[in-house]
Length: 193
Ligand SMILES: [Zn+2]
Image 1 (cartoon, rainbow, N blue to C red):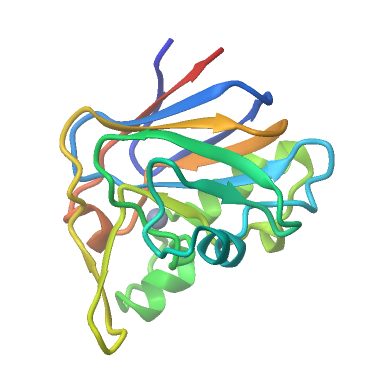
Image 2: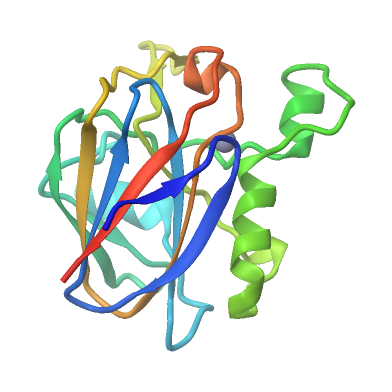
């Protein structure tokens, strides 16, 4: 069954070892931030640093694993029809919109959507790590200058993950204008046994 994450919202759920998670961009050009926690001990969580180190790449895609802060495999990427994801930038937060967008009004954010979704598992805002940013198109030049460009994902693109341990997973439909080419769209996902 396809589950829908409405635009600018998020969700969290359990995923058992061996189950697969398919994250779909139904309309194209929409980022989804994902964080992972060991369901047995949520102090173990997804680590950008460990993943980039062990996979020897800053572009994580099909064939790569997502690793934890305890250097264990949390997920394997089985398929990736778009092939561009980001694992450098933190989830957009209220401060992102103040600092990067000079917006001091309330603005929905991945950070808020992640930690409010994860509260039912006892996970607190300060526990939220750098997310694996599915479909996010962060480019960098030879000097290391970063730019957040429109996603390259087309309608129907997806990434298929397999859980390597029992997990709490949180997923969003990202709320940052620059990350999603100026419009907010839903994300779909499916849990497969
Ligand atoms: Zn976001």
